Image (cartoon, rainbow over all chains, first blue to last red):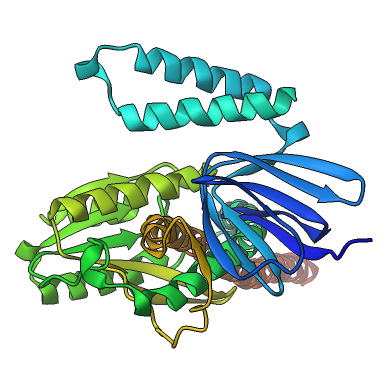
Length: 134
Length: 285
């Protein structure tokens, strides 16, 4: 069996998951990156996307939003604003958020309250729906 | 000697007050437990962000980030955290007194206030302080989104140059019986101990600068979240202690009144017996 390492997924309100894993893939801002045991020390920014965790033959997916990863000898810590396991995603809520954001973006430019925020919301909801439906 | 009926009525009143205070104590205790749980859950994230920033900041040129740049503190802002509701002992009084002292020292006219919690807004709004923003009514369903909203509002004003220095004044939860007033230097960002970097041989993606840029706002939000949680737990603890004391006092009052009631009853009986006996004696003669 390949070497394992300690992984923690932490959000401001909760420790979502921790334990020994074989492999984790996280969505870096410049593209996804994978981490195996004995990775070099690193700090990487994380974008909205999917965290994939492989533990033995079990695969697990999480929808996450921005944050960063700290990779050290002791293990990997993913500090993200939110993270939900694939099965815990509230599809209906995501769909509502998606509709809201879409409606917001269809407004005329001068009526738009906060374009950046609406785009982010759109991205978040699409990400959640994509992972939940996998 | 007080009238028997009056005393009975007073005992009844105090007893119903005691029931209310006891119920409030139990509610506060339950809320406190949840608040402490939330604090526990928030700790790992806050600690890690703090650690990483601590390591990184010595290597970063402060001038390149607006939130890190020290500018002469001409205009100050104070964020004061209070509760929405009263009946929690000296929780609000203490913090308002402290905040007022600090603000007056800094100069009332050069200071802006952000009041979190209704009590603070009522207090400073009435006294002619410059309250630029206030929040109320969120404590009962406190969530991380509130922290984001508040931190963003403060940061935005800071970046616009409305003020150059932000202090947060809040009650820190020490233990159930103790709260401590803390004044925290929120902006520009200063960390207590900028120790030597053991993190130098790290790989950064995309770049160290970018990482810090994304970390700083996140750190500010998490700090705000921590203040909210601390203040919330401290409020519940203060209320619990206050209500416990009130319940005890009510019990004591009831005990005293019972004694008085029994004394009054006893003396009424004695008088009656005396009357009967002397009446009988008068007849026998």
